[in-house]
Length: 203
Image (cartoon, rainbow, N blue to C red; front, side, top):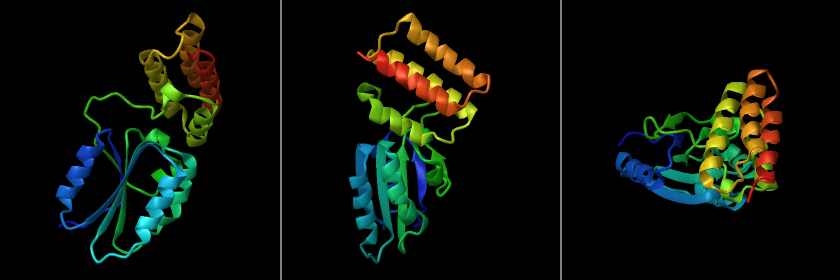
C-alpha cells in the first residue's frame, strides 16, 4: 500500500472519492465526516478522531460543499502538525471557499469532471447576511482574476437558481462587477457590492 498523504481534493462526488481512497489505501482506518456546511462542531469531531491512537494509518475524510472560516481555523493546527500515522483529506467542489492558510498547507488535487464548470461553493438557496460575511471572510485576499471567475460563477448560479428577481438592475450589477474588477477595484469591495445586491433581489 502506498503511503497516504494529506491533501485537498476538488470534487462534488464525495462517495466516489471515498471509495477511490479506500481502494488506494486498503489497510488504512477511515473516519468520514460529511456535511453541506462544515461547521465548528464538525471540526471539533475531526480533531477528536485525530487524537485517537491507532496502529494503522488513519485517513480522516472531511467532505463538504462549504467549509466555514471558523471551522477551517479550528483545523489549521492539527492539519499542520497531525498525530503520527494520521492524514487529512478535504473534499470540496471549489478551492475558492477555502482560506489561503488552509490551501497553503495541503497539496490540491483536482478531480472535478474535465470541462466541468466552476462551482462557487456559496449556498444561494439560503443566502443571507451571515453567508455573505462568510463569503467575504473566505475571500479576503482573493486576487482580481480569481474574483472575476467567482463573480461570473455567482452570476450564473443566481440565474439558474430561480431564487432571484432577474431585473435590469441585477443584470447590470453582474456586468458592472466584472468591469470594476477589470478597472482595478478591490475584489473585496466588488464581492460585497454584488452580495448586497443579491440579498436585495432574493425572492
